[in-house]
Length: 168
Image (cartoon, rainbow, N blue to C red):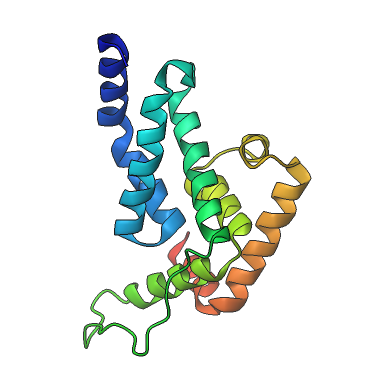
């Protein structure tokens, strides 16, 4: 990589890494796995930086989604533990349990449905762009999102009530 490309890549990473790590965390559900995912993708992207084109963030995000889906296919799911981790005795905010339930429900979704939800609602991308990233039709994005949201409502029925009363 020449000096100009290195500076361009470094500037990109410095400017967008916070947003990219948030997306990686939502995809993986674990801070360490998110850091590993992002580092893997950025390492590969650095080697191809000249070929990335005018939209490097879109390139990196798509690479993250693809890499995470490959990890799920290889069986890189979270390991079961005999006892759940300890939690505080009292929940002062009232939202922590709901967030944990939502997180666990998201992790229970199949990889493509989770990716559709991340792209559609966390990244706030239009259906057409999600379809392009996922390599499927807009109709598939709609049906996957609909089914995934229905499954989340089944897994965490308290979430719908919470968001209705909170105005969200």
